Image 1 (tube, rainbow, N blue to C red):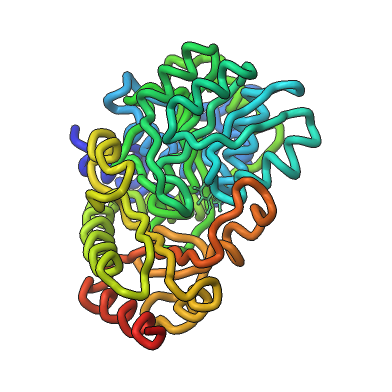
Image 2: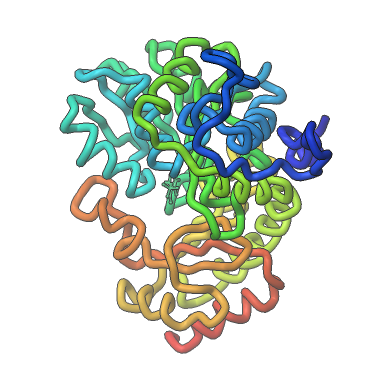
Length: 387
Ligand SMILES: Cc1ncc(COP(=O)(O)O)c(C=O)c1O
């Protein structure tokens, strides 16, 4: 089956008891057992397993792993919970991790403020520079190379296949945060990654109405998958059944939404690239983007995220964020509605003063699926006042 078909049908077999076409919300914490140890289908407690969550996981596993020999997916209460669990399964005190030099601020904070207290060290490296990655791996053994592609918020595009080869040559795992691309545009397991993480809050959910996360690993990765199942149950950062249901509902339309996100973002990026108030545009779909060729090779489309720098510095960036009428000023991304934000003061404030600090004149857009001309006009009016 092809992607669009899997997105709608994987995990969504009509309910055996009633024929319900959509998986029910199993809003239950526990399950009646037919005698001690006599579970029905293995369900005993909803921290461990829940049928609505299982439906979502079956779908995510199919989307990320169909062409990679199968996969197992684990849903979490948030993207950060997914990252935390994966790192606690894969790493031990004393281990070292290479992270992107422009990682999502929350990921940086997890390493810098939480995991460093538990003996896990990290080095930020520009992952689109393979020689820099090789040098970092040669200088100090790493347990994990942690990639994002494209990165948040600078949209750099590391070559995931080359990173997997480099990581494996040095005995490290490659983890890919696939939040910005979604499995419709990019499937890191097919490119050699050992695990994929998602903030399902974003494109997978797609409607800005639910927070969630996921880890997807190849079906053959026995120990990693068993560790994730064990630690998620032991530590307990699970999503509720309604959240899983909302996410699964969002996933069904992922393909058509992403096509529109990509088309709209391309038009927005082209307008910005020609605008006198804009000094630099970050969008992998622009031929001038340094990662354009890599993105073309490893992605089906270039995504819905666009960042740009303004000529007037930080104040102008903040002003533009306050002037749009259609783009809503807010954190997060990947919903049907367009959002605008100032990373240095908002999503990436936790990276201030670090090697991952983002430019103060940077604006980030999550381009939604509204009418493209309306979106372009809104940005033009927000920028025009500045000239
Ligand atoms: C690339 C990326 N990874 C992970 C996360 C964390 O996900 P969540 O907010 O669902 O915890 C985010 C959130 O913005 C993100 O952008």
